[in-house]
Image (cartoon, rainbow, N blue to C red; front, side):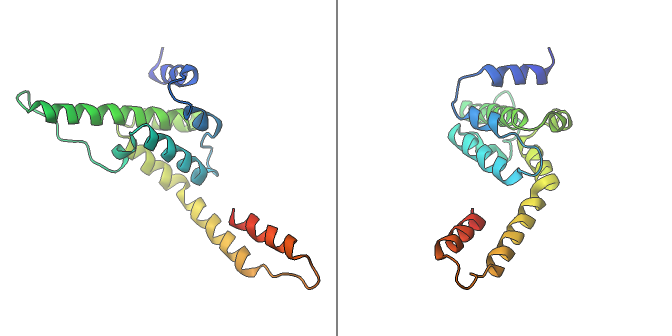
Amino acid sequence: MSRLSGLRLYLNTASFSPLVTILNQNKLTGSDYVDWKRNLDIVLTTEEHKYVLTKPCPSFLSLDAPLEEKQRYDRWQKSNEMAKCYILASISNVLQHEMQDVELASDIMLSLKEMFGEQGRSARQETMRQIYNTKMAEGSSIREHFLTMISNLN
């Protein structure tokens, strides 16, 4: 069984966290990058693995390194692997194949942000433009205008 097949089987059958359902139901396909990233951040934060996206791996230790340093290194490595699993399991099959050999979860996230992050920025700009240009038509319902504005903000 390949590493990727094992990962899929593990995360599809695992009930170790009800939050995994969030990622299974909201896979990254491209246009949904902002929503996907928010859901991934929730899961990684809850599972205490998000720090590997911002903190570098501790230096590889010598055999005579103190136990505390070895534990810190091992904890970071395990969190990196778990973060990679969550990321890979929550992206499309095509993206999985592209990213499966990347060693660091932070590198996978950087690649995904480069691919899809700009779409989120342009969507926010377009939404702000819609909000700014939306005017209440004379004689129309305040309620309808309010709901339109709320919809744009959402």
